[in-house]
Length: 316
Image (cartoon, rainbow, N blue to C red; front, top):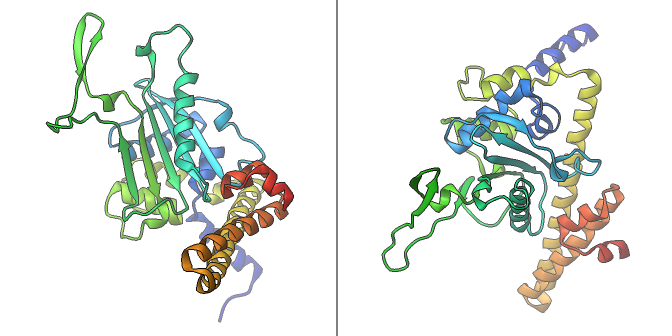
């Protein structure tokens, strides 16, 4: 029989919270911008990029300032490392139409923001874009994708190397060392036992668990610095509200997707499956927009998520 004594229940809850860790998106928003917590971010980036990373500073711009609307969908951080490279880490909680186009724009913007008019092209900074995704992005069997630029000979298959002048010496570099790199982490696709540092990080991103005996860079520090119970009661309340918003929006989108699939199949029987699915999908997007409006979400954010125009959304 359970002990219903309030003091015992409170103590049990406290012990349970001791092993609960803050989601990474909340940590990026509130904690990892502080220099004292860079070791968590350094560890994550070291594992993902497979080389030692040391962050020097967080770079502020319009794209990573906190705002009232970013609590809904996206959290990102832009940092400068010890090699003078820019690293963008973005966490996307819900589906966004034209997502790849948007991260391409974000990388281009980061490049142009950090070169002054009149400076030589050699001042262009290498950019890494890391996307942590909690929605389905296309079709694929892996949970970790890496995109990089190479120039490959059409007839010979060799990879072109570029001669460059560095001070008084001529050096050879691969275009991949200059062009941006993109990493897509499809968190929901991870369903294996964590056996590597990368697996351990993705498991934490998916369910918030960290092994007590972990030696993975960043997670060792996260066990101490990202504990739920270490926050004040006011911070815990704000964090719980953040989780509630995410759960509500995911429920809204899943419901709309299900309704659209059912309607599409029903219409498909009468008018042909392809046409029926298209109509069902369109109706699902409209219903999603209606539900998001009821939640008080900004029209521009609804447009990004559904692909509908601002005018279409206002007319609903």
